[in-house]
Image 1 (cartoon, one colour):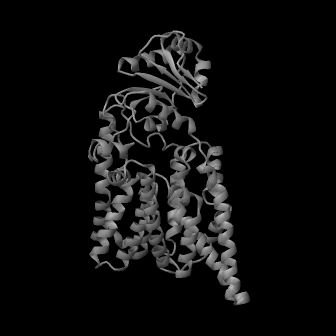
Image 2 (cartoon, helix red, strand yellow; image 1 turned 180 degrees about the vertical axis):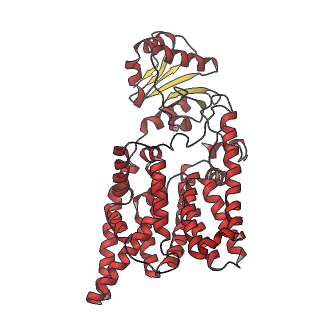
Image 3 (tube, helix red, strand yellow; image 1 turned 90 degrees about the vertical axis):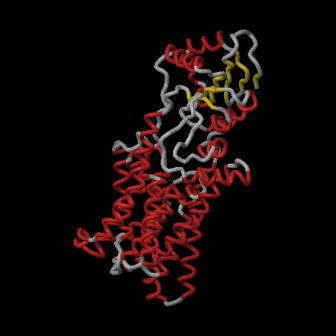
Length: 457
């Protein structure tokens, strides 16, 4: 939606827009919209297509593989880097997020690149080009996704490994820290000001930094170990934690894993609602799993000294991982919002481009996006159920006074019409049903209720 608005209304990256603010511009506070911006630029060549946004994520996924290989090569053996990169490629969360029109994979790519460039700079402090690359990557990873700030812990580990307590008097280190945080701080302050200055007064990600119950944390761990990483990788990850390393920065991925554990605890609500919040765990899990697999292969070499046995072991492992990943990632590609898609397409067919529409959709913008219309979620404080029929009626009339022309109830919330009987009666007596299917019911808010029920399927 933000990408499409860039394309249609101009490339003002400081004011990203959504379409669920009624007649208002819909400026919102959000992370730096790099991915929507890139996608919208390609819209000029190919038109508006979701595959363009997906292609942006795929491109960054491919780049992340290169930097992960380089980073693991610095902290371990080259063979371990190959194994880790192979595992990273097949982890379900990697497959899913690496093909989604979301900024998460882009931010992760910059995270891996930042760690690699900082490691290079710490080893070669005189290489200012590497220092600038590290600064750029660190800034971008936090700008594109604020939770990526957790790389601060593995970064601190590397600085301590290189300088120990002397880093406190190292001007270059402090310059790097200050310059890495300056742009993100300025951007998120600006985003916050936008979120309190313009309707719908929304800051993306708000409300997700909350602790949850012990049962919910257990569910997050189970989900991560199974559908996120696969049991094969989860077991190898645990083994990799205890494989000793005597190389510089050899414990880098342990510290990155620890940072993510802290993030899971702090943002329990986010992880409980969005599985892709665990994406930052994937490189550490892949690296530690690759370390464990390499260690097991070295033991096998001592026993049989046969390359055929090693090759067979790798083929069996990666074939098993690929199959397991397929089993766990497949459900993510099942159509889960078909009613929202159908509702949006029908609203686009029924209404004029200038129409304002209301959609009861629990705050999911899919229907509004595919309608290509501006409007509101219902209730406008999305994700909220009406307290009673009176509140639902009052909200509807308030939005109609602001210019709403149609209201649609998707299949997922049709039960509201049974729950709020007086509201249902009010709709039927005041307005006309223009279309009704198993996916949605759409009312025209311009006319008065009568026996003309419109189309029904």
